[in-house]
Image (cartoon, rainbow, N blue to C red):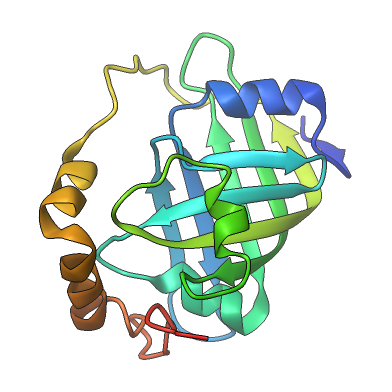
Length: 182
C-alpha cells in the first residue's frame, strides 16, 4: 500500500499545506528517540527536495542535538479527515540558529515571531505515502495561541533566559547549541 517518491510533487504539497499538524522524528546514535507533534504555520516546502521547519521554543530541544550529530530527520503528515493518507518525508537536515548567516534567509519564509528558536532545513531524499486506513477521523477545532502568548509575554530576553535554563542540553546531556553565537 505504500508508494515511494524521490521528490515532493504538487499533490504532496497540496496535502501538506492542508494539514494542521505534523510530527518530527529524530534520533542520535545512542540515547532517546524523539517524536514531537508540531502545528501552526511553521512548515514550508521550498522546492521538490527542500523543506524548512520553524522551531518555536519548547520544553526540550532534542531534535537539535540529533540533527547536529547525524542530520537524520523524518517528518510525518497525517490526514484526519474523510480521505485517509499518511505522508512521510525522510532526509538530512541542518540546524540554523539565530546568529548563523542563513537566519534571515530562513526567516523570510515565515512571519517573525518572538520565541523562534531555530530553523531546520531538510533535504528530502524519500517521500513515502501510505493508506492511513486505521487512523481515526478527527475534526479540527482551532489553532492554540498559548505558545505565542507565552512567548510574547516573556519577550526575547525572557525567551533566551528560558533557553539557558531549559534548552542547552538534550535529555541525553548533549549540547543543543541554542545559545550559539557564531
